[in-house]
Length: 591
Image 1: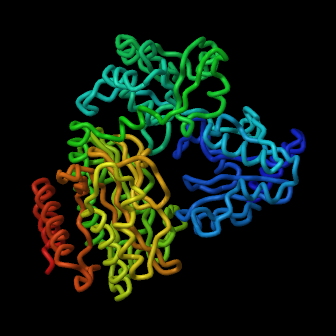
Image 2: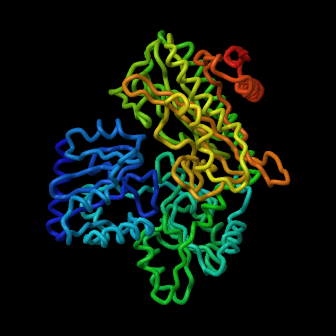
Image 3: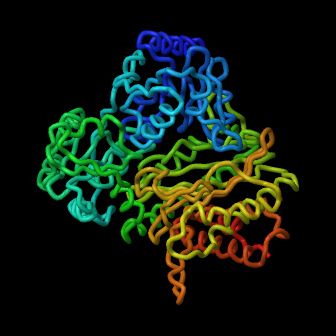
């Protein structure tokens, strides 16, 4: 841990040299990404924390990392000895880093941040709050670069074209649709990497588990401008882009190009756009802040994408059934670790039709590790599975035609009545949300209670969100829609694909989560309007041995039986005799 202590000391020297009293590191990149290329994962470099969310603040006397409930246990373990204290977010009485700074710094203090990694929306909130507290937010372009020794090189994999037979809509149609939605603006800035990949029907592997490339774009009636590393675009693809009217410029030329624009009305999403972009816009231009048009468009999947998701669920379901068969026949006979579980799932998915790799690092947790919500097993530091307790496996895959995300909790041997009760309550929560019906225009925060109600009635809860959007061969965590308690003004719409993943975690004992991917669909129409609900897409058996059927209603039992019949019907034709027989056994009706 000495290296992290030394790196924090280097930051403190940087503070002194620049007359700063604090440094704030957002934990993201110039595209406000959740998943980062190695060249932008400064949070890991400075702290050793490997989670996907966390903000770091360093002052002369203290250093802290702020993260949410998914990472509390992980952060405590990974930060030990680094000199960085973990602060909790999204809990009662949480003190966010900005309030903490206002309390701990004297008036007149200056807080440095790199504008490349700070969104406009966050900048405006912080600047106002700090000003009222007598603090100053100081933008220091290149701050991270100046502090990072031996910074990794930018990724160099080639960009490739995703055929319209998978996307359903050509990039030209997407350009036209974005232009038609501008409502008075001349051009839309596209800086979020999944928005960019979706708009241009392009994919790459610049970021592990996130099939995108580093770039920016300007799209409007007279703009089809792409800013990316040109040497990563094969000659044939470059020619195709040019035939579609796309002008391609170097990635680093984007800010200079913006500064040269004159008399244009430029629209950007303040939550997805970094401050340096706003500050680079030519002085004669007008800026409009609005939600990202590509983000809104891509959240509603077209018919080709929806069919692709269903095809991906078959491929993924086959991999998962083979995995369950392997676990069932191997536990207690060969050595299996949490790490090797992830390796096995990666291997099984790789053999499926259309496979393009994992959609996130597999979370395989045995016993008390299940309470570490985003636990990551290390090859030489993880549990060996034993024929007792629970195994929680959260995994997913990318396919040319869709993306998956599935969690199952599996009994590996004798289990307690409390574990069966907890599992059944979580299953009831998942079914409760699945069976919900709600009027069009309802937001995710309004239906979160359909999942939590049964847990609350039993004095139970979980700290993470219930559902997130899922991209079409893109980010497994896709905005702008979400199902969680925090207010989100985006309404659910038919064609949106989301996760449904309530859970329960008993620290030091075990964790339980059951997750399916669902499609928002129209359910009915009456004189009171249109009503929506969900269609389940995931095809993976639920462990019947963990269910206490006395806690289930007749409707819930019928849902489970119907679901398992659907799983069997869709997967069995592709299975050999032994695994087909196994699938039949683990999907038998319950009464």
